[in-house]
Image 1 (cartoon, rainbow, N blue to C red):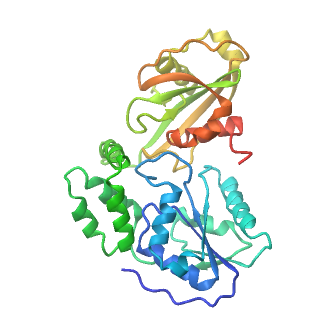
Image 2: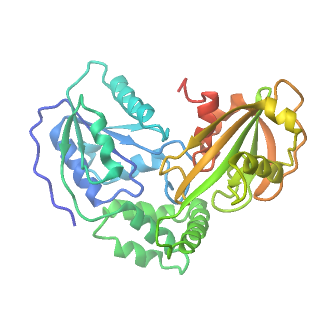
Image 3: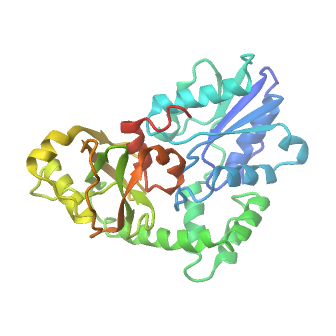
Length: 356
């Protein structure tokens, strides 16, 4: 159980509370109540918005907003505003998006109180808002959303959902448990349960290593005119999701060699060395610690531009169930279909979110 925090005098116009809230639990509720006690209105910033459903991010921002509303009395619900923010995997862009979102809600530049807890590396972002007053509340119970998600999705294997929810009665509001019970009847639950089990088995293979495992991968962003080459993943994790072609670095290959090999294996696209060299535009490393569900994965994305020509024929293979040329202009509306951070890899090369 969490302790009720003492009320903070309402010396601020607005309180801001940032989180992912996947699943909303009692420690988060305690912080939210403190924010509501400290200011007339509270902006709840919902991170990891607009992306595909995964075991780490199973709920849309609208579903999380509803989960939060249900935990409060009606009078407090009316004092909430919700600000969905995507994961840019770029701290400066993310901070700017949060600031801009709050500023658009309150153009008169109110006094802002930022409520949170500086617990570890996952919360150092709280220091990136020096213009706001930070209320570091301290630890509000030893509750972790990741453990709640493991219990929730792990219960599907043996049909113990009710037992799992009963075990969480002291960790999450009753309204959250009711939400989870109802949500489990949707098709998303069964699909994400399979994804969760696949990831669990994959991580179990590396559980005995003496050091944390860091994977190195390669990806290829291939542009042809106003289109880009995408695949549909044929295996978990991310089965059925869109991605750029790529895979693991082989022990005796350079990242360049691995990138071209994976491109050939997954799409059948094989060009002359001279064509590849002239089409090469850039290579960029993507190494955000949270970019992949598999764990710590560092990828090297190679960008090739084949120019204004007829797109080459494709043949899907290996980990890809399909391969296709997709208009770049359509990508911004397909964000919630992409595996891991692949939408943001494309965003870094094509500026898909600059107008958002």
